[in-house]
Image (cartoon, rainbow, N blue to C red; front, top):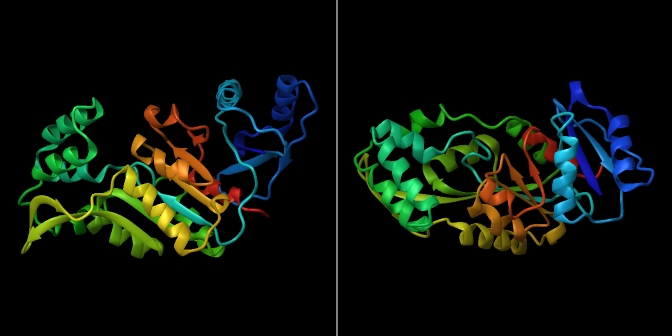
Length: 288
């Protein structure tokens, strides 16, 4: 089936039904779901057919000619007690934490250069992380207290976590960022599990190095599989959400993998993503 997300003030299920009927040369009936998002509605086409990625991309492009509309294809709705695994930076929050730390340290341009090297394939994730962290040497550990309150959750994130709690869903965040931020986020939103990188320190100063297991694309996937086993979840009841290429393996290991404000490097390899809707539309994935 396919879920369509539209702004409450710009939704037209009749026009959507007509567009789908014309495209597929058959009568397509749309059902409006009970509202769970404060700003977006959800219409469902309960079709038995599974559309290939190319058709979903084309359909998305055609429908977006008329309005800001997102779509996600799923095989079935979730049951209560699902597992949701998220990336952190640019997914749950708008910022990239390492960039914000670099601004504090006055080394933003240097860190951005390393990021560019990594994106061009000249450094792998671990090399790039270690090199960027080296520029953070001597920052006071107290910087995290100040920085955390300047981070902005993406639209719908607080509402999503409140809704997931009511659904008895398990939640996890796997981040290439840092434990100092993730532990605060875990406490604020009652997250069950977090995985992130540990910045070494001596006294009240950062040493510019990272120790322990680096959370990269493989660790994100392995962490999801570990929690699937621990919580005894079926794959169909696991959702993974991220924005970058290093989230792809995690999305592939889930039953429903979703790009959120995703970069092209991820979009080109997945079928489901959200460009416009708020994060709380993920509550529509549950059976009513």
